[in-house]
Image 1 (cartoon, rainbow, N blue to C red):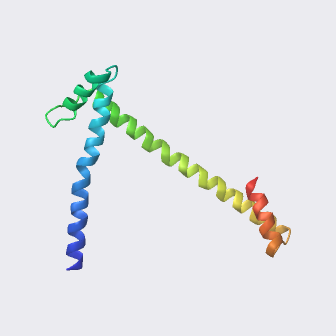
Image 2: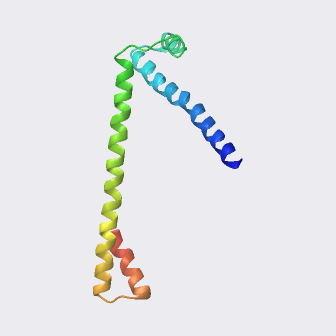
Image 3: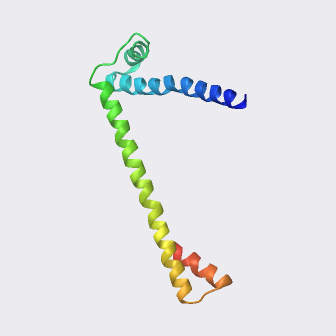
Length: 117
């Protein structure tokens, strides 16, 4: 019974979130199409563009999707590089502290200064 309720809740959550993602993509496409418009003209166009009946121009929709995929690919690479650097630093400092036979407060102070470098 609990599994059934859990599955139903998860199914609802996924079904409810799908249109939100689509709306975000449509907003990006509409914004791209509205480039150069200002004030009331832009406001009216955005209202029309975000309606259900309006379809984005072919060049605006893929461009928004391409921009999103570029950001998605770049982000994990940057995140993956940072922890490795810190991990290497930690290994180096540990080896150095071990070779100096540091213990207790001395080791703690040494590790703090070593990791800040």
